[in-house]
Length: 276
Image (cartoon, rainbow, N blue to C red; front, side, top):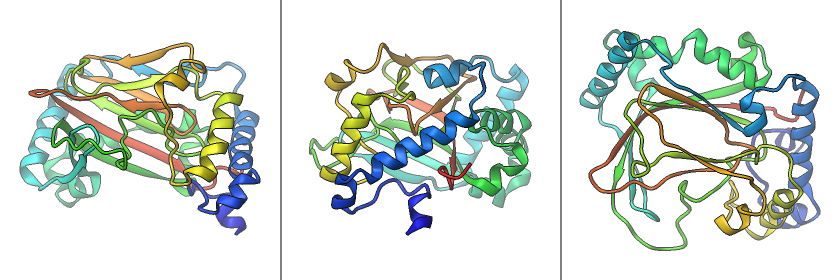
């Protein structure tokens, strides 16, 4: 029980314990651990919940990564994922596929395991680089997003709805391989929702026993009262976005016909967020 309590398990299914405040305790505990370790001079990521790095790589490096990205979709059969609520289709290639034929993807793998990426994650998680793999897990994949089948039904939970990934800090990196505009599923973040907020905490408490099914969803109407600004990250290719998607409320924008979004998706989760 104790191990589960301090783990990264999203939410307990026990409605009664959640009603008594168990999930609230976990949220506050994770926030406390984070604040103890937090540096005094906060950067944009810690202040607003996200940061942007334009022209992250040199033109030559970006060109080589783009070439290998496109090659991966010819080499492998991607995993299919359909967001039926909004008609978004995602085809992904996990890093494990690339490692099977690593000689064909040297630049891509070098980027995914580079010092620059590990430095970004380490600085946000406040965990030394040599301890990242011991304290948590990385998930890495290539993604192609485009318009798919649309079935209007409230039973489908969608990442296009504003949500939090879990109850504790999560480091997510989205690297744009293509230009991303308003019509090609831009990443959207509700500024400063990564900070402790009583209204959000109260909403999460209610949802923990009325809808104990994982990552909580929030309405746009509710968010207008808790966030000073919603930032839609329409950016040029070769832009890297890093965000706290555990505390911070965010969503994937909608994609329209004849648009495609190509991204590299990296996520890190601390396996024991309630342990200093």
